[in-house]
Length: 301
Length: 257
Image (cartoon, rainbow over all chains, first blue to last red; front, side, top):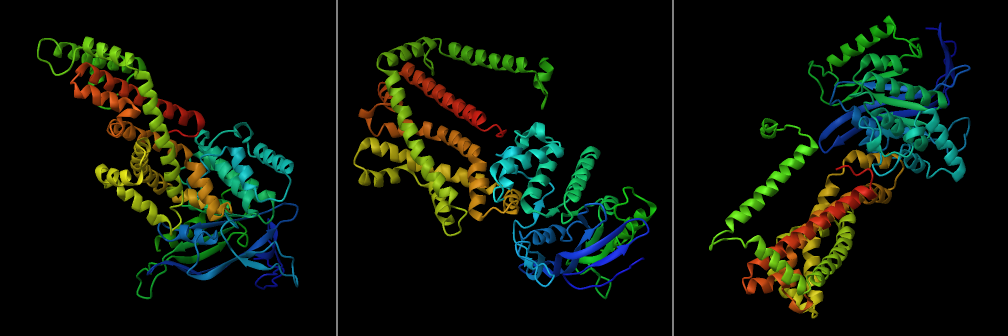
């Protein structure tokens, strides 16, 4: 591991990691989760979840973050995602994101607790407003934006063209193909939530073509702003390792007596940037090894 | 071809569907003609029905139809406004019991309600309207509450994730997002009201209407007129149903159910 600078701290971090192949820097914290737990009555779904993600910078390339959460069904991934998006209030702990409405003080970007709407959320059904056309839906996403009406129209039309949705801008969700719905759902959240987007099992039930569509959407989001952060869950471990630069394994930890503690938590984190596996553009043997290790952890959880 | 017609879940071509419908119509009419032959018969003959229809027309059938439709539309309009207001406010926890209470009231018998209404409302025409409004509203509220309950949580979360306030969620997902369902609830419940019309119109004979015509025909056991009126009421009901269905599909392109 070639770490040339390792100045560390909770928020104003700035250290540089240079890999053999791809160099990158890490700057401010963009997501900080601390001691998060969620319980419904006596039933604790997830507990002791803590992690931090930082803004990644690559030279001569706009690079957003792609974070994957993997784990067996019923381990609390969806509940965790609801907490990350502010749709569910944590029983304990906090989810912090930078507050870009405030100016930097003492070199630090002030943080704020996540609230609903701060982080975009796309569920696996790619839910859209059934009574709005694509254009109307994107217009609605920009309703709180301070830009003028003509600028909004220009922005929407540019996104529609870039994302291959121009031809169907006046169609309703029931008139769209699966791929068009996916792109609209992602775009809608991208326009509304600024930098963050959580996708719950975006590849579930998709055919090869639509998986490629979503992967292409990820690339477009990632390359449009360095702060853009995609957080997704999937049961396709190879896909998670191929796409993400950071992978978290969620599952039930083992008790001292070897039985499972039936509360979801993060069992392991794989920083694929640090491992030199992120942004490779191909799935190598090293990726496969990581996927195998993840599966092994999952099977024990 | 006939084999296909008898096999469960068999998909058949459109023209064959028309053929099957045509065969059934011919069978029903045939049965009607045959069963009304002879001196003793349950149903009046087609000739008697045609005669009944003619006499009804001469007595101002069209005016009575208009009177019934006006009563129905007036009651439906008031009822849908009241019901939508109660149901759209039901997501507010404090107001939810009101909607649930009205929904439960649909089990009340008509007689009890008309007794109290007759004390409160002096005008007979108003009485007709309000009896219909009360009954229509109870069914509307029940059906609309079911529509609300069926809204998937994902749709609410989707709106919330787009920074919608709770009131915006109500407006976008529940009200605007389910307008086509509200129209369909109106269509389905209108059938109940159309059926109740005969009973309600008999409250005030002077106001006229199809119910009055049926009552008068019934009094004189004029079977030809009774069946003719039943057919007229059925056809108007089907026409209203078709209009509302077409309206829903025309107004809401996304409404595919």
